[in-house]
Image 1 (tube, one colour):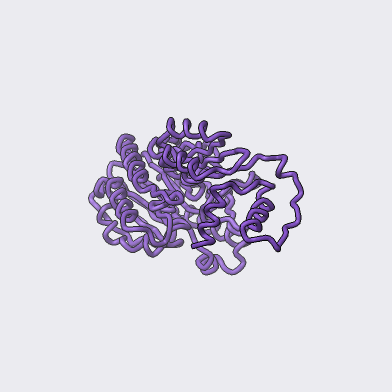
Image 2 (cartoon, helix red, strand yellow):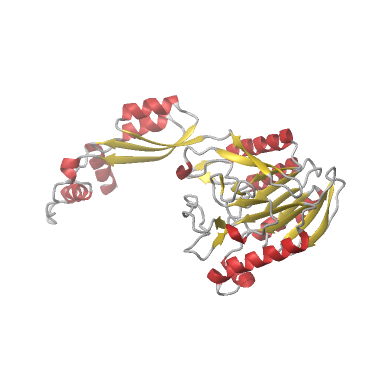
Length: 401
């Protein structure tokens, strides 16, 4: 069988003042196209479906339409779990309607899915944190251990007060009991979860910049040796870069987000994972690159002219632009740069006047008039740089308003 694993859609997410919804719609179409082209039998979406607990109408509409198309109107099972950016109740809400389309939405940890059957598949077994599927045209069952994200309150409810010590032990024990009961070599055995997992003793993996962190100290760090031996592939969500923290024979994979969502991800290629699996054998997987969406770029320039030329040559980007110079940018220079490109997210002026910055600040005479006092204050706060005429005109305009 073939499985498509994706995660961290963050539908509705913005990049500062810029909406990403149009790009998200394009990359959702791309994922649907890959699923259809690869003729996958099952879709796993490992959390952070939305970017916040109260997504906008357009983001919700894109989510439902994408799931329906991924499911081919009920012909192909789609399983989506909630992440730390999602409202578990919002994810669960449309479940009765979703099931009619072959879509299984799982909001809460330890959820028990009500068994149902469609023309193309049925749930053979269901238990807290586990489902077993029979899919038409497959002569073996598919078992899935599922663990959506649990917030601080739920962790205490499910794992007790001593969370730091208990979470690994409880998850390991829960997963093992389910695997021992249901996961033998006569079916394909999978786990999907949205959490911070790493290999014991490995270098700490950086969480996405600007995202809600899961790992606080070591309290929420789950070790990959908690995964039962029977599991052939683990589909993770949360980290935005594609990586396998397991082994070649038993992959434990973060599939990546579908778009670059912060400048810490600038230059990353995004992927979905296509898995080929059969009972009792090691899986193989291939990462399929996603090509839609604007490129995120961090660039540093030393002149306005140089930056404007680059901006005009690279229109389909979002850019964090640092301009190193000896003087502050004028309003005209800023205007020229913004008129040259529609995707400047951050413009960061950096003053390189080393001689001035090394000067010791003089004592400010508080008996001066307000204009002279502002000039001295500005000079003391900016490494000796003088306030230019344009800035002083703006100051006087505010002062006399």
